[in-house]
Image 1 (spheres, rainbow, N blue to C red):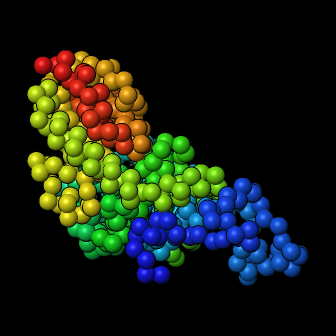
Image 2 (tube, rainbow, N blue to C red):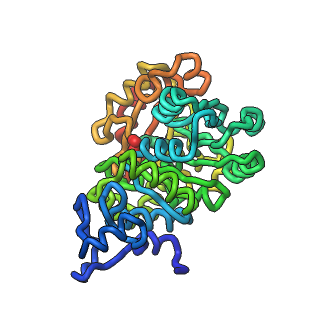
Image 3 (spheres, protein in one colour):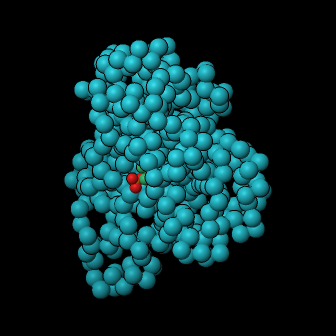
Length: 391
Ligand SMILES: *Cc1c(COP(=O)(O)O)cnc(C)c1O
């Protein structure tokens, strides 16, 4: 089909049943019934395509998988129980003991724990490098390296990496490039079209977009995804529930308009913060003052929904802004219609050693906002309640 992405987001993976429903049905069934013993045998032998059990495949989950694969420009997708189980399924599906990962050091904290603690225990080592230090990536690659892993923009400093350049580096060394695309989503950035081999999603974030369900996905080449990632998933079990899949693919239908609205609000907020006397510095890829603004606007359709900034003053000043909000929710989650605020140094990054945290720019003055879809004037007024007390 030669549809545009906005159309795939709405019609991708749709399969009408004999009931003629217009909106996609949900199939909350654990197993599937066969017409005969012979059919059951053929399904189990893999001689006949079709469903057997929802840990392996489910029609509702398949709609989500086909829709997201089409939006990312990928061949195949596997839906998983969470973003973490997407990363687990990909790494355990593809890697073996003795293999090695080079990862950006600015990744989701739990991903770091998965790599260092749990994969490390199995003899899969990980080295961490600064996201946009391309020489450091190259130096860290060893003969055993199989995966280069990153998120861009990074959280919470919104640093941007050149995906095409890292894909070239990965391929020159026989590695796969894996991009966790949770912050931009395919509506703003399509890593596979820039040369990445796999995309990871925490569907929990912008794909759902309304803070309801936990889920994830892996998108990539069909042969590898079906054999290794689905192979791992159907045996080890972190499958996506049909209900969650339904919530996610209904979310995908509005993803393009939501991401544009998140970005428009985030840019307006970033500009307003940059001019605020109580704010020392703003980090947002859509601002011309962002050090990688040129790369960001080349690689992304817009700046995305996350804005970070330093307030003037330390922890007390930052907490004052957090504690003064009335509409914005105080939570470390992101990618919601609601605007969310967090103080990274004492929440998401509190377990990082203080020197490492400071060196990464995550000081006590830093606040991160996941900009929602409320009226921008109300978001600004809610933040100004605390900010105006600092001057
Ligand atoms: C939240 C998040 C994850 C983990 O996803 P869960 O759905 O919470 O398991 C992974 N990567 C990024 C970038 C995230 O924001």
